[in-house]
Length: 103
Image (cartoon, rainbow, N blue to C red; front, side, top):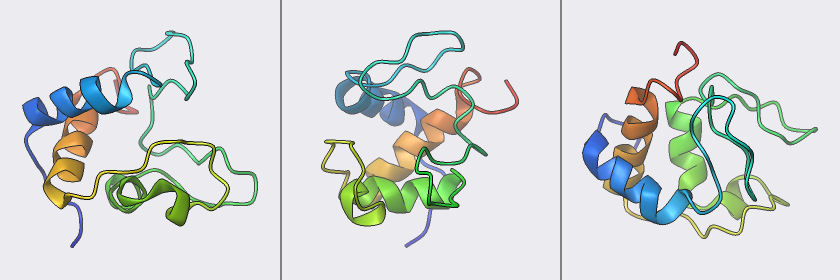
């Protein structure tokens, strides 16, 4: 499956319970264990060797199993196995004006 728009409200809830412990969203907020996600879409990964740009599909694949997708990642998160959960979370991130590269 590939990314398809999901439910942003459910995605916001997923972010709060699964991501907010390690990530912030608003411009200027401090990094936590993981980076601030403001301007995520269109950003290159933090991996020096990887030429990977965060878009809906790359994030969809990554969030299924981060350690498999980018070997050596420091992200301890095991992933979201349900495709719908990944779509909902990505939709939330895309629709949140403080995250998209344009807002």
